[in-house]
Each structure stands twice: as structure tokens, then as C-alpha cells.
Length: 139
Image 1: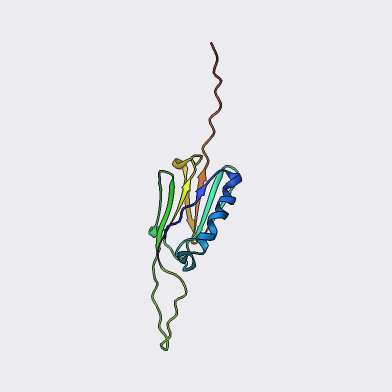
Image 2 (image 1 turned 90 degrees about the vertical axis):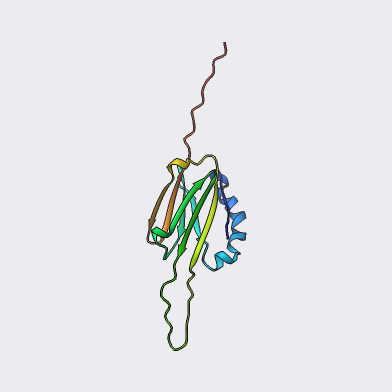
């Protein structure tokens, strides 16, 4: 299942996420754990998105930016099941996942950085530098 969230200016980013998250968290994909949960915050110069991806290898992750959409895709592969005395229990989720976020025009798409450590993906989304105003002389 795919979800889209808009990253807007800092003052509205959390209010806009709050309006979308109830629908996202009530979904079957999130309840099953197949849609990564994220934290998004503003550190002053960047938006930072951290996604929980335990058990996902770096090779099974794909991060793509196309037009105004940032997409995180991957797959958590099933480890060997163990059957004991006719009882089988699998509580952790496995399978493919995909989550998309719409990026506002103030994000510098060329300089997005990704780090992956200990099952946490951290994306740094820098803001574009504002162009200084240009004074136009009237002749």
C-alpha cells in the first residue's frame, strides 16, 4: 500500500503530518509492520526523516526522488522458521514495503543524503538557499 505526505514549510510540517497520520496508522500495511514508521523533524536548515527498518539489509533498500516525490522501497526477507512440537509462531512482519512523501519546492533534491545504521534510515533533506533579492533600478 502506498502513502503520500507533503513536506511543507517548518511551521506547518507537523500540523500537516498530524492530519495524514491517523489514516496511515489505521491502515493494514502499518499494522502489519510492512510500512516503515517515520519521525520527521526540522533541525533548522534541513528536514530530517528517520525510518525504522529493522531486519532490512542495505542492499534491499531503494530510495528514489522523482519530480516532487521521495519514495522509500524495500523488502524484509523471512528468516528461517523454526517449528517446535507442532507450534509455529511468527510475530514479526516480512515482505515488500513502499512509502512515498511529496516534497515541497523548497527542498534541495540534488543534495539529499541517506545514512543507514542499526536498522534506522536517516534522510537529510536540505532546504534550498534563498536567493537574495535583486534591486532593479528604474531608468
